[in-house]
Length: 296
Ligand code: FE2
Image (cartoon, helix red, strand yellow):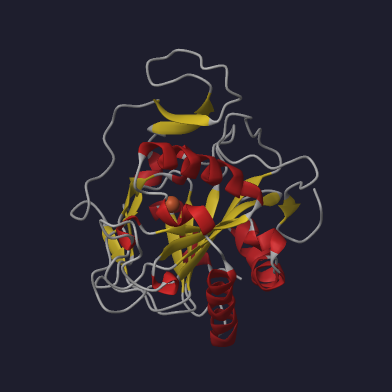
């Protein structure tokens, strides 16, 4: 599937860009399905999640459980001071995560393809398991920034293996908050890991079952500073960007009137160890599946 120069770009830069990787119809079908999921989603009491500390904590629990669910996360700027949505629900959701690739037939069909398995093979990912998926809306006007990070911070394996597959479902431009990446940055170390813990911020054990989270610093070297240290990846709909798990990347706010939908899939190698302190844990009856569709 990949050309020699695309494979070389992945190894040299830590990412490669494959225009025309997905048919227009497949993008349109996924987009329609994502909007249907949001329309059918009833947030209930989560409607006001961002207004108090107590509710933030419950929101965190929903996040931790979302590795085996389909959950809609609001944009931070979606709510006014009165706790009510500023605009319709369909224009207020930041993303859908993190298991729609296993729970929704349309997402499943888009994700588990021989083509994507071939791309994973071409960039050297052995025995890929699909760990998570996200449908990101980057809503017009309120689409939030995603700070510069390395994906291995959030999806750690030993040895490191996480690889991101980022599909532009709509055109991505500087104006609507496209992806930015630091070429060659994947040859630097992992700065930190995001882990479950039962300790509170003061280090006292709460006796909980690991439903708190914290960052543990591994390397104090700062990540590249956006936007000057990164390059913008402006790509048309249907493009696939493959991202090395150590590659620093970032996306800006979207203050434009145009949305920037994207779908991401993160895979790890079945040969690597996946620690139990990773935030994303799947129940025993929902094992990870191989990208080629065979249960691991
Ligand atoms: Fe990322």
